[in-house]
Length: 608
Ligand code: F6R
Image 1 (cartoon, rainbow, N blue to C red):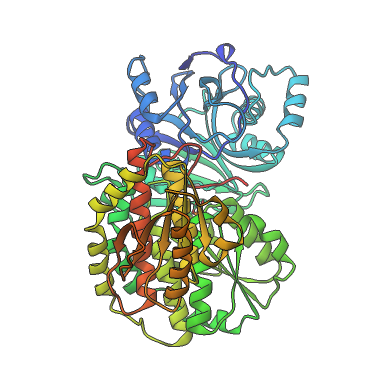
Image 2 (cartoon, helix red, strand yellow):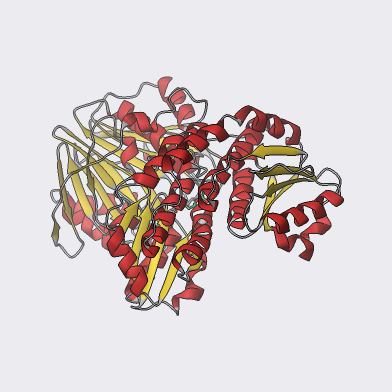
């Protein structure tokens, strides 16, 4: 733990970060509000945390490696000032070790400015050399620290005009950043800028709360001002002024955020992840039935496009892989799923006759945003399929749909995945002009039936807890679900898991199957059933321990998780992720893993 009263105490190592940032100015206890906000932001990063408070002429800082809870405990033992102005940070490191000294906020030479930052300052080495040649002393290698020094320098020149000082600093910086700063000469004014990562201001007449995310201030206000990219902002209690570095003033309008505080609570569950798995009773029904905004315009754009790309990362990419089957089978439309981080290969085919469907829970994934920016510059129409209202992707898209899963706090995507699949299914159905081929209410009941298997899935997890490797196989539309199931096991339980197209086993991976190797076989009774069963027999013959997930039992399964009979392949697909999520959850529980915040991961990946 480091408690800094003056800049001289500070020596810490460099880091770049994803992170959550928050500030408060106004009528209230800044420390309590910032700490509670950091708890809500912890899903964005959780290896270190810190706060800075304006105490008269001084800035008080407390920061440490570890969780926000650890910071809260430590701050509780200190004599923190009571004040209405403060900032805070929760970190996900990409460079540099996790240590007290790497934690934000960072201070300027004389401790007059404190900064929290999300993103990367690409030209920080050059800036640092220049600042050093002008007499600034650096006590860290962090890119963030240059912001604090630059602000201190510019504020000393333009103290009466912090807008000018901020504009000059932002013009100097290159990279992707959102930052929030307080200064001893700024009083209750907070400076902030957005150049890439998200920044939104919670608005009240007597206070403002700039933050990475609306979830951090919902308890205080549901009025939010989403800042445009490239905004510079001065924020006071109840007033916000924003402009571009060109000087153009930006119109700001608070919007109501339609998220209930209850939606972000655990509501009696041990983990957010478990609650969110259970939420799927309601969320799937909602995603299948809610009013879908501009779906007709979207269908029209897709129909008239020469090429349709589905761009996403991680779990959202798996939803896109499922959508490829759904669009082909239901609407006869060929689509190209593209991993956002591999988009550059595909960009040459993107032009003004293309549609890019970008799928993202957070709507903030840097790789996805980079891809859509490029696609838009080539003339493509961008359709965002998002879950977080007001996200960068939603705002950047020409048209967007919300998948209606509600806030997802657990780092592992669960309910957002099934809602993405449901929403993409509805788009395909609209394209074909057909109604949903099953009763959405029946899906909600079937979710309940799968959730009733929770204890038997927990028992399977108990028996599998010591295995080092696990395989998940599926064919056709079940293949992306195998990928998704394996991803859940890796990130939640820290067990090596591989998802495979069932037919690919014999082309190599079969060599790894030996006596007792757990293999999850996704095999609902559809056109893939018999071929997958043959693949199941192949692993069985090599001694595999088979966990069958199907609506039909087979004697080759050592463990059987029964899916309800749905009479529609697409309804079954919506249910299939649930036992996989539960298996991964209980494996993680058995193995003592940090479930809501798996190590090394963050929910919103806002750097490349
Ligand atoms: C896995 C997971 C990640 C995300 C990926 C994309 O459980 O959560 O793989 O799916 O980082 O995130 P979004 O959907 O926010 O773009």
